[in-house]
Structures are given as C-alpha cells and as structure tokens.
Image (cartoon, rainbow, N blue to C red; front, side):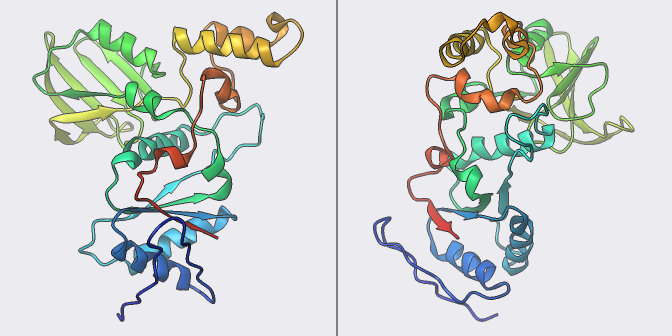
Length: 287
C-alpha cells in the first residue's frame, strides 16, 4: 500500500488543515499521521455515530505488526439529567482510557466533540483510587472488601458485570473496571495463592495471571470526603431545603441515585477535561 505523508504541525501554534478526504480518506490520513507523530493522537468528531465506522476503517489500515490501535472514549449515551446512569461497560471503557492516556506513548483515541469538552474527575482521583493485586501478596479479606466498597464496587452474590465483587470464604471474585472478564482470587490464609480469569456464566477458568490492576468503579467518589464536598456544593448551588431532595438525601447516605453522574462537578473542588489527561505531545485532530 502506498504511504501518504500528511503534513503534521511542528507545534500547536501551527495547525494544518486537511481537505477533500472522501470515503475512508480521513482514516488513512489519521493512520499515516500516527506513524509519523511521536505521541498519541486524539480525534474528535461532531457526529458520535461516525466514530465506530472510523475506528473500523483505521483498524483496516493498521498493519498487523503495529501495536497501536484505535481506542474509543465513549459518550455516556444518556440524556442530560435523565434518571438513568450510563451502562457499567461504558464507564469501564472510559475509566480504562483515562487511567492509561497520561502515559500513552503512541496510539489513536476517538471521541465525540462533546466528550472532549465534558467535565471529568481530576487525574489524581482516577490514579489515587486505583491499586494493584499480585500473587504472593498478603491481604486481609475484610480490608479488601472495605477498600473495594470505598472505590465504588458493589458486593453481590455472583459477579455479572464490571464494578461488582463477591466473597465466598477464601475465594474473592472481582469484575474489575477496564476488563472484559472477571477474575478470581484464590486465598491461602491471608496470601493470594492464585489469580484466575473466569467466565461469569459458566464459572469456568479461562486463564491465569500473576498481577491485576483495579480502577475505581465510578467517575464520582462516594467516599466520606467526596460526599461532604457534594453536600456543601449542592447547598450552595440549589435553593430550598436540600433534605427534601431525594438525590441529596440518598447520596448523603452513600447511595448514588440513577443519573448522579451529571452532578459530577459537585463532588470535586476542581474538574478536568480530556485535554488535562492527554500528554503534552498529543496531536489533536478536530473535524
């Protein structure tokens, strides 16, 4: 396949315009730009429905030997202040990208223009509420349960989706955010004896690993400090008796109501955008 040589800006002050990119021309130009640019590329389109098609086209142009892939930073796919929360798989994909983007050497990130400007939790929240587990490590199951609950995981009888965990004697099942399969900790006393991935429907093991990373289960903190910040900000922003508001009362008890994600700015003293997560050498391609 002949190589294009799309002109790339030498600095953010010298933008380059592409035109007449018909069909899959945009995907080809982005792919070639990713080979020339020493850093990640963030592509923002105004129409979210075009993102998936663009991702497939970019994957087509990438060579098998290339490690970089097109990753999506999806929209919540809910209406503003609707009484529905985003699906856990969407939150999982978003948190996984937010955790990896600051140290991403190369790669292509696709997102909608609205998501590019959306208010996000600050970087220190995502990284500060992430932790690792590895075989041979000494842990206390009760302390692990409290820690998982602290970062937003929900304790259930059987894990089925991201953000859930279950404890049965010396076995701990966790469906971590950013993963496609849950994993099982086999405990020998207070020591992690093994870590196995498994199918949540059949409960059969599908592989093993020695190390796993856990992200927070939500984009909002339901910690004591986070709830306190929310309560103060809610009273400052909304008039009337806050005790009469269900969202205020339930969140104060640590029970997030559906749609609580749209109140994200009330949980932080300062929020961020995708620009704050992107490394300094990121190339932004805007439609």
